Amino acid sequence: MSSRALLYRRPSEPHSIHVVFDKAICPVRIRRHRQARRYTLRIHAATREVILTMPPRGSLKEAKEFAQKHGGWIASRLDGLPVAAPFGHGTIVPLRGTEHRIVHRAGVRGTVWTEKTDGGDRLICVAGDAPHVDRRISDFLQREALRDLETASRRAAEKLDVKVKRVQVRDQSSRWGSCSTTGVLSYSWRLILAPSFVLEYLAIHEVAHLVEMNHSPRFWRLVNRLCPEAQRAKVWLDVHGTDLHRYGLPAESAKPRAPAAG
Figure 1 (spheres, rainbow, N blue to C red):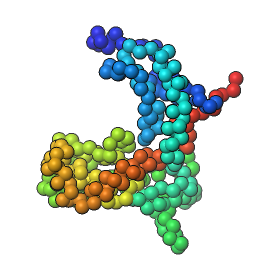
Figure 2 (tube, one colour; figure 1 turned 180 degrees about the vertical axis):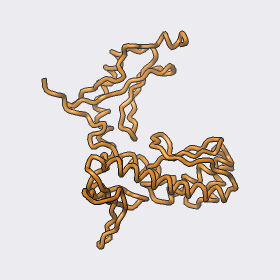
Figure 3 (tube, rainbow, N blue to C red; figure 1 turned 135 degrees about the vertical axis):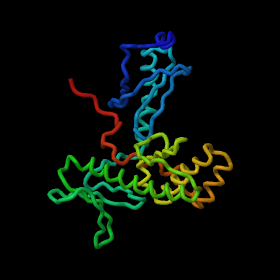
Figure 4 (cartoon, rainbow, N blue to C red; figure 1 turned 90 degrees about the horizontal axis):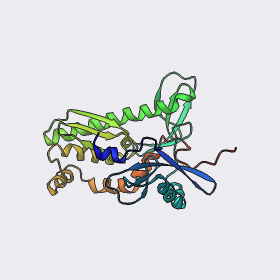
């Protein structure tokens, strides 16, 4: 371990602190950053995690005071985030941008499938016991995302005469997709919740990096040539992208909680 790391190491320092505001308690994760010059707060919209960054020589006491001073700001920002939508019976999920209602059908054979009612309602039906509904829906959506993204990516690769080594999906919160120099494409599975033209744009965007590993004017000309709706897709993600991260979150995710008695 370097002498710098030893200098700023805090073996007994907690990973988080708590802010009390309006009779509720909110956890705040703390982290030291060697380039930080002051205390800063941010809220990760995808995970709803509150993060306090502090200078390497900052004190835990000052960090707590800073976070508590901004308790109202934290509560306001958390309240402004889209409401969590757990994967459970009755939840509306925008599969490929179209609203589908999750229906739990206990006692029915099978796993997860889609249906359309006589009235035109679209359903995502899930069999099995109630405790498994969340996982089964999540697995289903990830399978659907991988299938659509593989198809779209290989279609774009054929047009550009490049080779895609592998396509994978993860729950990425900082970016919608990435491309490695070896031809591995990684996407957020949550793109299956967006309209198809958005998923198509992201696939073309990442495959185009196999030709231009940058965001130069030449890269964007390539993307726009293959995807006439690129600008529309970018605007959609800017406006609605954050909302996609609320699906599958527990109902009480990152909500300030009432203090326990005693």
